[in-house]
Image (cartoon, rainbow, N blue to C red; front, side):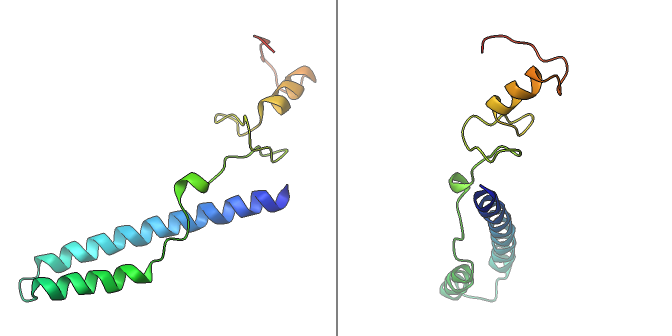
Amino acid sequence: MKSLIQKDKILRENFSNQEINQKILVYSFRKMLNNADLSKTVKETAFVITFRKFKKVTSKTKIVRRCVLTGRSKSSLRMSGISRIKMKELIRDRKIFNGLKKSW
């Protein structure tokens, strides 16, 4: 499970770096479009060349939210980062207080 958690961390880092690089690229391309000295074909080719540098590393859909304690990928809660099964055990063992049993 630790290898899956590490893999997810790497995917998250790569995605955030890719997102930052794309924002920088779009900003520089818009700045270049405002420059009236260059022709349209030169601007387009420059954009294509710079865009090829940033290959698509990952996509947002491949990032998996996992339980912090067990590494379980399914049914992990957003508010705590713990799976519902582990949350149930912690409430049962009185390690988390004010947990209500609604419908287990």
